Length: 224
Ligand code: ADP
Ligand code: MG
Image: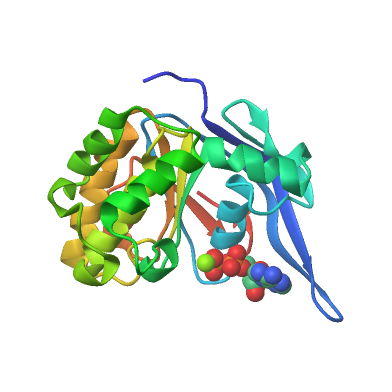
């Protein structure tokens, strides 16, 4: 594994403006994410986990500070340029399996679409990613024919295809039981080993334990 970070947050702060007040969701957060490593982002509800993941993945911009992914400074880009850069640089997995998938497409179609979004990938790579995630035999299945754990495996497969520098997942196991969550994280580890930095938020200490590193937030500050 190489030592050049795939993702870097420097002094990242995010202030949200509500109707008549401001919320400081993130306060000068520094973090680096290396290829091949899984990082768990932990902390109580409201501590800023989702805010940090949205900024790291280029869905949002920091109020102060900078974010770099794959050598590209996402935080300097306007929305349209960031959207284009994200397709190449970031895989993203939402909490709810249904948010990641389209009900009338089967697994193979999801992967074809994901590969197109990345600008095309070698044909063998789709099969390789599906095998690593243990869903290679389910190509003809639609989401409703998959278990929650299998749906999230597909969501990770879509996010991992094309080997983006970072793969970001916001509470990907929140809707799964312990056994499915542990099994999912195990196979996601194989994805990281291909050279992607995987960063996921979780409430669950058992899930967090499966990561190589942990980052802890409290009230928007990094405390561990
Ligand atoms: P977590 O994911 O750890 O629960 P969030 O990043 O969602 O934390 O939220 C951090 C803080 O920012 C919370 O106080 C939350 O209420 C606030 N917040 C998040 N998103 C917004 C928003 N769009 N507008 C205003 N406040 C927000
Ligand atoms: Mg959250």
